[in-house]
Length: 342
Ligand code: ATP
Ligand code: MG
Ligand code: MG
Image (tube, rainbow, N blue to C red; front, side, top):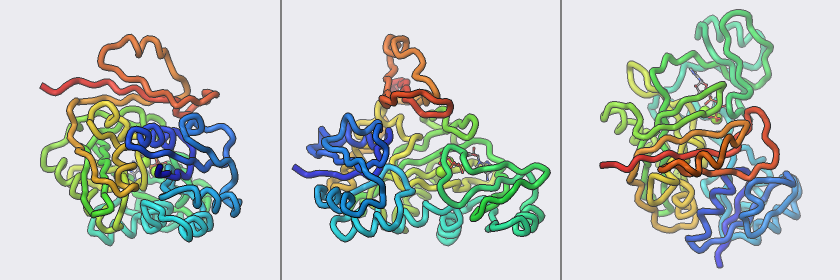
């Protein structure tokens, strides 16, 4: 049988592996950490660092295609793997989304709106950038940030600079939305309906579908996702985060993978984002992205809460990640609450 390799063994890898099985695929996970959510559902887990060349090559040889569940895989590891087996989505999508500065330049180049930004490598750059972009503004490291980590909001005194960084002007948004889109090997594009996202402390708390968004902006959001997918010659599922402003949509960032704000699709669509990603990277026809239900996804952060209470709720689905240890800010699982559409 065919094997899909996944770089990274977190909850996204776990849910990809769970979605691969009914499509007839086995999953091999490559993950440096000894304990990981994907381990118990993968056919095989390779536990080794990303600079272990022998293990990377052995892993690659055991797979028919390799994908990833996080965007910070070291370039050298990708080079080794790509010499043996295709990586989907491709390298360009990774390069662009690994670096906030590259990402902003790329998006601007497509004619899309982004927050005003400036490259910041030292204290002097920051002073000039703050003078230009004003306050409040947000200083973000170019690489490795997630869940709001590596970000400082500037209102007065200037913080120390962790180079390389970018300063972003503050976007006055009325809401945040995201589009989860997929592109197949044959260039077919299928997008899920935009979801409305609420963050707490820089971490996604809930996604609600349908988003409270005028029809025209729903269309804009989907067209933006399609434009990015095509420009990157993308294969797989991608998440696009957007700010809703008085003058339309501003692109916040792009994730070259399945996305937390797409978890609602598990219980509100016939083909969810995980199955869609497996279909895409395996070169299969994409599934229908239609939503049969409205949904609210609630992240379980730092605690799994009361699983029995959730299980007793009608119209609620519980998705736990099997993490042994609960820590503040750690994503432990999520709940999808659905309401069937008239
Ligand atoms: P993720 O976990 O989504 O990858 P991240 O660490 O990459 O998060 P961002 O998406 O850049 O962080 O920012 C996190 C949140 O902070 C955004 O969803 C938004 O609420 C707020 N934010 C970020 N940049 C701006 C901005 N330029 N203007 C206003 N709010 C912002
Ligand atoms: Mg991010
Ligand atoms: Mg984000």
